Length: 437
Image (tube, rainbow, N blue to C red; front, side):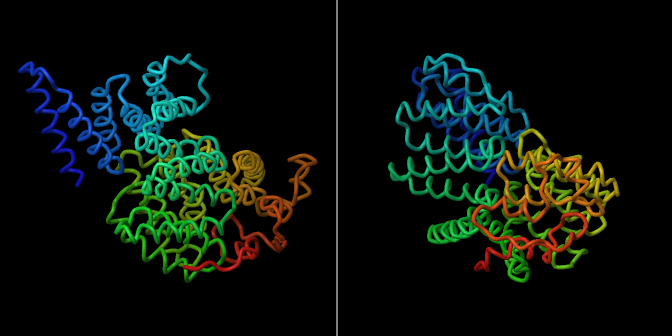
């Protein structure tokens, strides 16, 4: 499919070049068709070759007049490609064109170019473009989640769903609904995440699709793992992993492999977990954008490596992970705390866990905050309290504060480095009850 899309785009660009050379008088229709072909080619390559996808998007953007209704949609794709490549400043500058078209004054940028992304959204809302605006909404959610946190992403998701449903954009609303899944996990709203995953799977099955269902099954598998339902989690990962491999999109494949590795490690299958880690290393090392998606999974992957005695692999994963956005940086800090703990550098590990806990609390990732609140093995909580100050709390109190209105049982022990140990996770998440697989 990707090769065909690129071939179609190539023929359109050649036809346009010949028409321009022949000084054809009216090229608007051909330029529009060429632009759409280039966007399709970029979309088809986004999960395979980020550099080529971005090149197609930029060619399409060159064919968009400054005041064209479709420019915001193409600019959002260029910005997202640059953002995924870790070039956040460049991603921000992509949206200068839409701002100038509106005649707006230049405003100071916040980290990650979020003001510029919102400016592109404002263009679509201002000119009343339905589909294009829904696409910009969808492209905004991931960088917003990674840079500003799950609560901000979910608020924008709700706006996008309401916008899409008012305009009858059923598919657009479904895609945005699927984008709520991981932010819901971050916030500790696991029941909502599972219910949403079920709704996404049901809708897509009716449409004959499979992409969104892959994301939904991964989310359900993680909840099953965290609730100690290992057999159900294992069955689900063995169902979705072959499909993720066949789709071969890094956005699906990297988290699918990471989820499966955590499940196998928790199920006391170190050989299977190690093989999945090796597969991750091969995938992210060979493909453009691999470090970007690795950065979102590095914390869990490093824990798995430490638990199965793969210290060198853990270090290699941490070295390759992209740290260009807040969530990735916090995850990498937690991963390095795990590495320090595994090396016996308990004071260093404790400092990093304390910092990670503070960062995750501000960001809004409840499970990771609670994990980071656990002191390194061998360090007493009184000493941790002196190091962290009078506001330091023992693990059980930290878990209770992480999820309001829940009664957490007090963990009775630490399991060494914070891995996906079902005994530990069962202790801290027993309140949630079972989940349907």
